[in-house]
Length: 159
Image 1 (tube, rainbow, N blue to C red):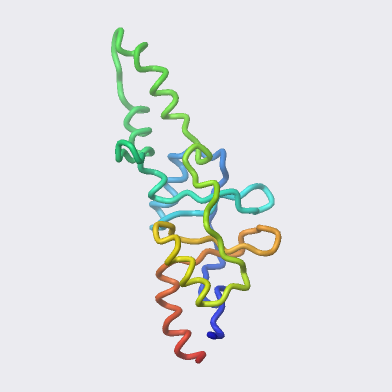
Image 2: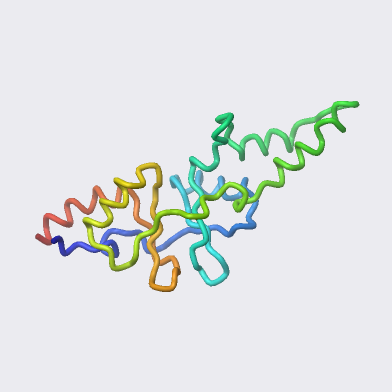
């Protein structure tokens, strides 16, 4: 069994968002930091979900929701069409993180070993990163596929 632990490879300075944040703002954070996703936490930093690039794309229409929000916000609709579309526009513009986040993301405990990290990514191949939580569910880090690949070198040195 490897000596390498998730805490040896995870990112400890976690950028997270809250559930009531406008979706557009969360998307900007993901894009600005070049992340695949970020944990969604409550006021005590306990994990309540994750929002990923995948969540930002409507599964039914393949539309990037934050982009659609921006377009609709800036779109000038005239005449009788305005009243017809107004409610739909408002609903889309008002979307929050909680409306699209994954409420049951895979997690890793802060004592997970390298093999457990690998197994989590094999089982949840469409999630990146995976939040790392302590015994009470507080986010203490995130681990990405890139971190796992970097861990191969660390694992070799520890073995």
